[in-house]
Length: 417
Image 1 (cartoon, rainbow, N blue to C red):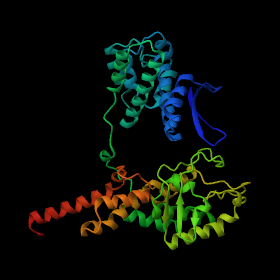
Image 2: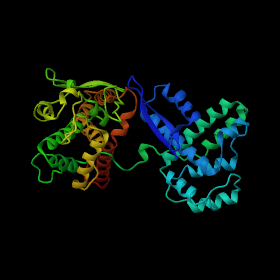
Image 3: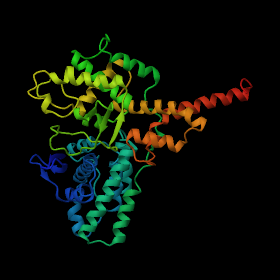
Image 4: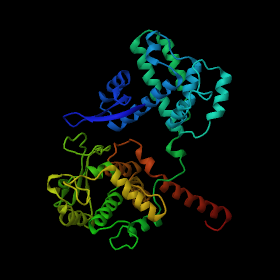
């Protein structure tokens, strides 16, 4: 059994390791690889967690296939073609499938090391159900190939050509990566959904899912900040009370990774660039009301710098809101509304509204496409020319394309000139 274990250094930096067994013994080579190729390159803790997750999956798979990678590589023996085919096959399966086959007593469903092609074909029929997403398989095989290339070169007992052949065979089993454009499910909300959401979070809404005026006010404010500012979940959770500027009516979004004073087990990350955002009076007054009327009544609030706090009754000291708390808020909203709504959907909705608002400037020639995207990138915290904007404008572009398509049909039939 392999699991991810996280810890903090005295300077606040978070890191994770892959451990095995009940005693939690760290795995030497996997953790060395992560340290060299990810921690030392200042990758985020989320990236490190993802890589360790794949390495844990691969370690479990090697146990199932009875392959001792380190022992093999020490002798200069690399993975065989049938073994790589087995790895490529299992990479399409959820990790629970590995545990199920391992617990089944190594019956005929378990792939033997010296697998013949006929046996592989038979096994494929047995397990070719309940597959993970293609991008998950793609990511698994990418991480596995890079790790094995590093490990083989570390032992230095095989030729570069042999290692390259093994790596290329692993990579060849990767499926076609599904791009965002291939995903027909829009992450945004339509106008009717946005209206229902905003009505639901009103303090006097009969269907408001929360009890207590303080909780209702805080959660309404959270929804409003997500929608009107378009910030990420990590950015909202990183906001401090001191990030509000009453003189300029701005909020400051700052990168503050690995803050040693953040008591959360999974502190939020600000993935995008730091920036100052002007906000309208109505939202700023809501923020002030929350701080003065509700936040101040939480025990120990003056000692906690973060803006949004847990209002749990009986808590001994103020705690900043967590990722899971935000997820719970939107889960409760989803249950009442009857359609899926989450924090990031409001970031997409903000981008839809931004596209609609700036379109007249584009048509009139007052602004160019590059100028508009520079503005969008600043407000969203993206690097210029990053191309991220395309991810957040799909619904708007779809609606625009449908509108033009209908106009063309009317012109063809002669209804419209």
